[in-house]
Length: 233
Image (tube, rainbow, N blue to C red; front, side, top):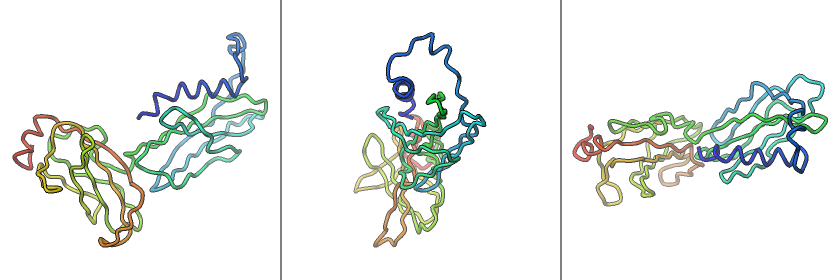
């Protein structure tokens, strides 16, 4: 996930600003009290929303919990501040990666190192697993979305759209070769990205929701060469 490589820089800058707003001597840092973390921090997702839950530390110095979301460029911004034990965020895009940083603050203004939780874009796209090498055209499977009457599945490779289908069930068996957009298509070697959208209307008026998720599988060269000629690799 792209956000992980930005987290240490973002949190280091954030912690420095919040602790003292200036440089801290190494001696002061070494003698500073350790702030206990929140325990049992978990992030649960559903279509269009996610909920993070935790248990505050059982210490007299506990004041509140602050949660930052860290976006792709490393910028953290506050999405929650309070004394509760959970927070729900709605209107999310399940095809994106969400990285949350849960920090405990004391009454003296000190803060813990923080705990990271992440909701990945492939959470509700079950198979094949993200990054999996597939020896044959795979069967795509995903989570059901309440109220969805059918789904739109799309495949891309190197930014080019290869495929679109509208199954009524939450799975789709791919073939080795097909026609799309007036051209013959196939599972060429490399990474194939796939996306799923739920539709709540009719085929004439589909009323698509936000993406259910995004994932990718990798087709090896030997399997792809075979798939150009048949549905089995």
